Length: 272
Image (cartoon, rainbow, N blue to C red; front, top):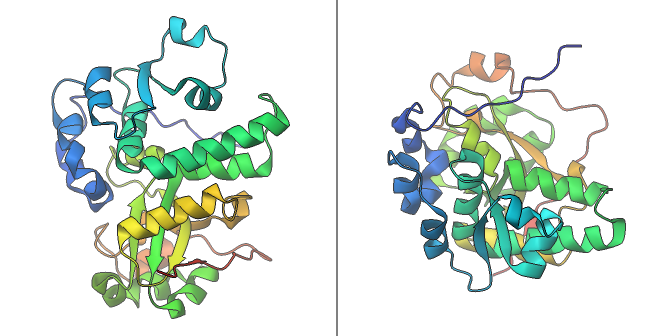
């Protein structure tokens, strides 16, 4: 069996700055200088943008790691988010913390709860779900529940191509790109990355959808199993990829058929 190659992000200065014009980065426009400038933003710059008074980024060095704490536990007990300097993956993680702090706090609290039960060396299915969402998560808002059945059956042509107008109107939309690994992979245009989606059904705006998802996660109502997460091939989102014709949705490798017996949970219902 061929092994999947580990993604290696391009060095700073070699990434085409035009990639940051992609809609995937739209929610992080306030950090565009962190992405586009020739120099990396330092830890002090990241902390100046952190909206939480009791959390801060800390350079991941030997002195920091000497406390022996698990990454998630350190955030809870010391308020320190270990961050590798001059590293795309950790820079995007910092951006998500600064943009969606409530959601990141919810993910961290649930991870720490499970670590307290399982110990730092073992992981349960909820921890895998939390990690997958943290790395590759997206939150999708859906106003029209009729858009859910084609997603349930992986009828990608119906979900994306036939409903292009619904995507244009905002009846279905990506409310937030949460996974920092998704942001990192998008440094190389043309990849068929697949988001792990939580779905919020209702007439809420993007901010409310993310906040509502954070509340569901904090309450243990979401992300208790990886199977809760719906795959969303981001190349299929209307206007997010070139050549979105019928053949594309039938042939591109990211549009996989649903596995036999696969059942997705109902969306999180917004009741604002």
